[in-house]
Length: 363
Ligand code: NAD
Ligand code: ZN
Image (cartoon, rainbow, N blue to C red; front, side, top):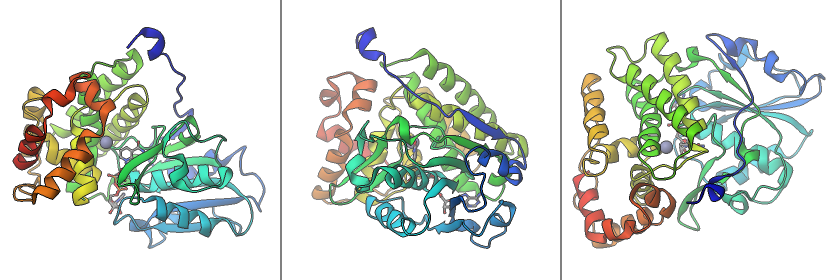
């Protein structure tokens, strides 16, 4: 890639409120945007928090709307369209707040763009297709690792087109964030590990790629350092490590807007499309068998798994039908950008059908 081709505008989150207990000072991030009592704010909150204790810490007004988001399945374009249809009636939405893991953050980003741009979620899946800024959006991660709080995309499954793709746009970036590490204290250990590893894997892939960017490299190096500190420690969930992971996730998400992932994410997307495996556990299943591509990171990953006695699912692709292997191959190889980033433009010569199936069988 020539230096001019590599030059492009990009965007990161401009303002954030960081620190334990920050969510209790939520009015600070509304300031300047939501000042009148009848300015309507929509809060999309992961259904884990549906007992209402977290909502009671927010400066709620009668004009506001709270919706609890069921994150059993990853967001689909249909689910986002339905969500937006539910939000349209009533007063204009002045701000939209996503409180949760990657699924809830992505739902808030997508809904924000659709409320001002109209149309359907699928219309904007791709690169730079969102014409206008969305509704003012605030992200509050309660689970660290995907980097969705910092990235310029929001990933959705499009069942009709059999693909998983985001609205990659500067308009998708949150306007403000609340980074409160106390919110991740309740995440179950397995989930904490799987989602946290998304950052580690993003950074490994980005730093091993051909397409490089000094800003992305700097963020990735720091995020990797923090991830190692967290996942090689005995207590990955200590308050200090939860704060470290929250920052690693933010840096990892900032890096990825300026670089590409590599071999792991395409294979994980294959698992996700064909077997409905969730993104982060899928990445870990793939990372566990990446000896040919990322030998040192694979070894280090297994050490982290051992330290925390994490059970990585195995055997899910051992005995599938020819048709399923074909579908897995297609859903993997379609991700040309990251695969070329990792292996060069001739990646299909390395990732032949037989090689791809062999890798899936190892999982
Ligand atoms: P998630 O949002 O799917 O949530 C996973 C589980 O954790 C859910 O059951 C949820 O209820 C629970 N949970 C969340 N916070 C909790 C808390 N504090 N305590 C207890 N339980 C809690 O998980 P994720 O791994 O953060 O996100 C995955 C999603 O992120 C996928 O949809 C993926 O496509 C997307 N993603 C987006 C980007 C991006 O840049 N936009 C990047 C990577 C992944
Ligand atoms: Zn990821």
